[in-house]
Image (tube, rainbow, N blue to C red; front, top):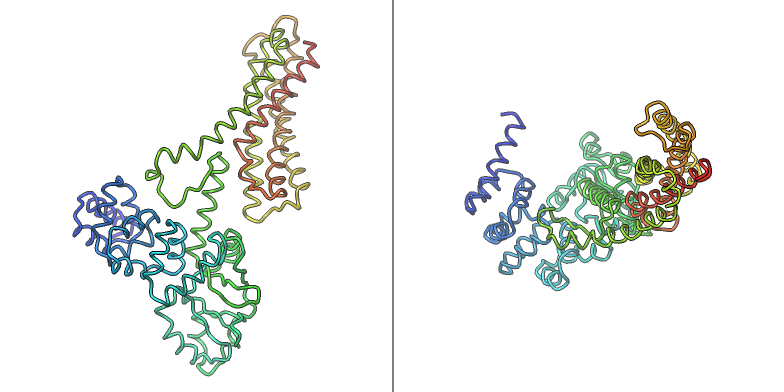
Length: 462
């Protein structure tokens, strides 16, 4: 059976089992399907049915799913079980996933869960909880393979035999000295295809790239993406190896950071967490959006004040209102485009705040080209294919020139604003995404009106 057909069949079976509510059917399909697919299916259920299923599943079945469930669902499911079941489920989680869970649940629940753990699991967890959750230390796992540099290939293979069950990533093996400082890394093939008598220091990659535990998680994930790493070692200030960030965690980090940037660029505040959209209460959506919408609405009142200030010009040449929305919208669109290009470049490490002048100069040239071409096109449309006849007393050619020139200046200024604001935000140690689309659009709306009416007043003598 083709892979896609098999996936569709499994998806249908999962959906049918979850909708039936039969615990036995759900257990059967959980053993057959991937836990991530089961978790996705659960997200589509209403709260009552989802909670009923999670509290009804045996502990071993829940243990297979728990890594893929939102923290709120995990907390709810665990609170309905006895301590023995809770311990079994928690012990099944990788150390880094368990640390994420403890950081996301309420304080009292977190303490209760920690006290249920075995001494080894608790010790590993406490090390991870020393670091903020948005740092490399907070996202690393301590379940990695480590060898001393004075071993031979044969001795290394023997030691790895005892580590294989407790190691999350065996494709990368790290080499340390007697003081536990990282000195190199190995791949499994380096051990498989070399003589057992060969010292591992002769086949390891020396001076591996590392990050310190206090490095921001996004920077660490970007390093993994840049160098195409399966895992990235995390060290302290003395180069002592603390743990590794795995490729799946790096993907999660990049997804979280991208989601955060998109939401901030759209004026959505607060933390989303790992809860699916349909599970987030309406009141939560309201709280996250209201303040931004209110602030931008109040700011936009400035547009009304500008219109009122130029009421005499509007009364003299009411046709000005026909092209006002176009000029304002063109500025908003080009400003948002410029900001998006700058923010993306900064997020990928292609641009820094130290290159402020180069970035603004580049966008200024782009804005000038866009403005000139669009300005000429609109001016030609007004002169040769007018939508409405120009008011008496005004020259059609002069009015076309005013609109075309205003559009050129508006687009130029908007691209400069769109490029400069994210860079200035970075210099001020603010999140550049916060000043993106909504804020820029509101700002260039105001500047567009001022530019348009000022040029019209000067050149049309109104």
